[in-house]
Every structure is written in C-alpha cells, then in structure tokens.
Image 1 (cartoon, rainbow, N blue to C red):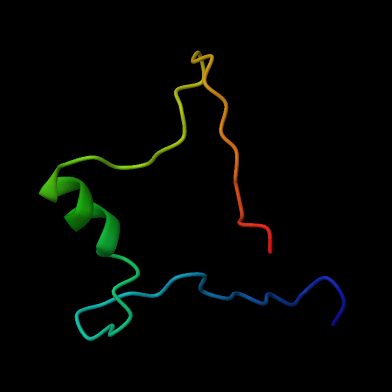
Image 2: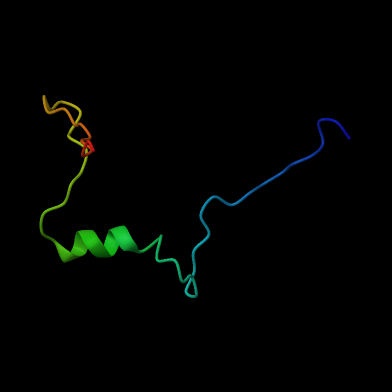
Amino acid sequence: MPGRVLSARGGLIAGPYDPTDRFTYWPVRVARGGDMLAPPMPQSNLSMGAIWPSG
C-alpha cells in the first residue's frame, strides 16, 4: 500500500509511573533556583566551548 502507511513513534512518553525522571527534572530544577548553565541569549557576544582533560 504505497502512500497509505503511517508509522508514528513517540519521542518522549512520560506519566505518573515514569521512573526515568526525564520529563520533570528540568521544571523542578528551574523552580529550585540557583545557578544554572544555559546557552546564551541570541544577541549575546558570549561563546561556549567544551574542555576535556588531556592525558
């Protein structure tokens, strides 16, 4: 049946019994307050980089 097939996959399924804590982690973390690392605002002149130890 070419052209008549739909394959739908859920990317992130969360619910009250989700043991992974993937969905609620960030809203809870932001509500807790304090310092957080986040991407800069688009108009910012700040650039991000990653550093790994050598050796």
